[in-house]
Image (cartoon, rainbow over all chains, first blue to last red; front, side, top):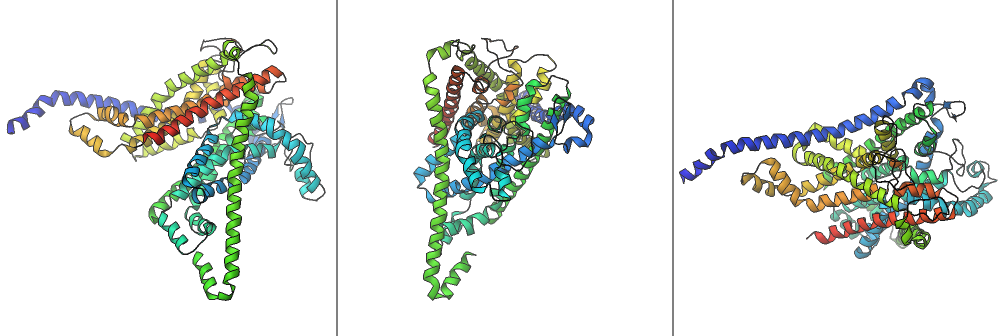
Length: 327
Length: 294
């Protein structure tokens, strides 16, 4: 027994050295690839900032507060597209959050398990549909509805009310902020629903069961047990959806109306950062001030979306930590 | 808060009937709204699929697959766009999958909770949700402007950047599901760590990793924004990755904005093809996950 126990290590000594080499090699390869990911992000940030440098240095801080976008006079400012980005995403979320919450409530509390998994999967499939399809659907299905029914009705109802009339003013093109908001809502509902469903399901069943045991209705369980318990996760999911909405290009480009205009009207054509880049890039020769301004806008969009992601990660992580503590 | 409602009910028995009725009404209202929300979401999904089928199916002819894009009225097809999409998506996965796999291995097996790994994980998540048009701008500045022309390679590079973070995420998640005992068994048999990882852990998790790769294919195959400034689109038949290259989403974008009847028809049929391809991959993956887990 002694002989066999001692023998293998001696025989294996050179082999161990070789293995160590393989390990070191593989380890280096893997770590270098990981660092490569960091370098990619660093490169993206550098390229955006250097690309936009010409615009930043020409217009100075004025770039962030000017609402002009005029290729003829070579004067560019970021305010109009930033406004369009924030406004359309805000409208999208206002529409999407109740829909997502209702759907998640239905999936977790109301639906029979078999139906729930089928509908849950259908909602997930909606998330997989390419964004250009939403753009086409919005342009060919939603825009006529908006132009022929929604906007005339809204004007008829609110056109004479002092404050609300500003919201519904403008020609009934069908394109504009609200249409973009609706398409964005359709696009982000699946991801918000998925996060909400996951945090609702992750709650220990005993809490839900004891509330039901006390005689609470399904809505009371939702409102007073599930929702307080999962608040941070829910908010994290919403912020995640907001990040997606603000960076969306193709769906918005079809329906936003392409106009660098700031106003109160929900039906006025506007532009988001992403749609402006997609629409104006082909007419921006390399090295021009316009291209640089578009890159500067890209840098702003990047900053906005990274901050959003950061916030959502913090909220979701905190929600998870809380879940771990309480369960 | 729940308790408050019930004690109220107990304290004032004469009003409990009214309160119970009110609580029931609120519950009915809330569940009704919830049903409504679900029906709206399902209706929108149905509307999108119906619009695609109604407008896309009539144009689904053989010549669509045999002819390249042509002038309006000239009877062109989408053959070059379909092949261009396949080539660029394929190359992007060839570039993105190894990088994603190795990074995922780093995060799951080497980095664990180190500072570097946490940074890499966070940055990868940032790339995952970075606006796709920014990826396009980035690759334009990096691979198009210096060379002076658009190319299929740069399109594939942009798509690879979009595919990689998805594969990183699924690889890490799947490797973490591999039981420690399997690693221990491998190490106890005298295998080196890299062999344990590649031939035991990755093998055990290969189903899940494949899922990630398929989802990445589904994601990048439908992307338009990163291709607008990189492979640009090309109306002629071309397999040369160094030249501008057509792709289905970009062709759809060009045709959908046009005023010509036959281009519009092809845009819808192209949209139907892309969506069906993406949805079929997703359905296969999801049903496969459910069926495969025993």
